[in-house]
Amino acid sequence: MSIAVDIQYAIEAPNLPTAADFTRWVEAVLKDRKVDGEVCIRVVDPDESQALNAEYRGKDAPTNVLSFPFDVPPGVPVSLLGDLVICAEVVAREATEQQKAELHHWAHMVVHGTLHLLGFDHINDDEAEEMEALERALLAQLNIADPYQVAE
Image 1 (cartoon, rainbow, N blue to C red):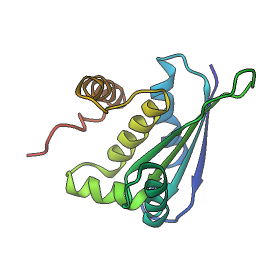
Image 2 (cartoon, rainbow, N blue to C red):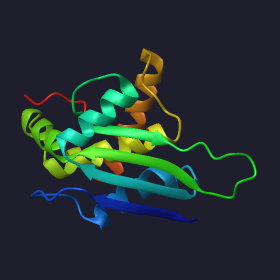
Image 3 (tube, helix red, strand yellow):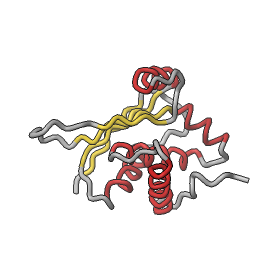
């Protein structure tokens, strides 16, 4: 099995995950599904996140994670699964607001985004329940608490 994770740090910020962290989280998603491939993760500022979110989702605000699956043309031997764009400032803010460890929230964003690259979605309730259950199980394997549990 071959999994490659390319990390692009487009910003400098405190408490960013290491390349080893990102790789461990992507591998957690792909290994049980026996999926080979390459994922590119780009860590960005709010301006870049907002520009991409506006262009590709029609939402004029920065967001935590954007997923861009790569559709391999037939007959082309490429194993690129796609790209994740993660806004460090949004992740840090959400972690604080949700009273979560920042590194755990990063892991959740990577797991969530990687599942999107594999075709999972949360547009309707059934899809959302399936995807959230997978996220909970994968994060539990990483010793990370249920990200959907509301802090008291």
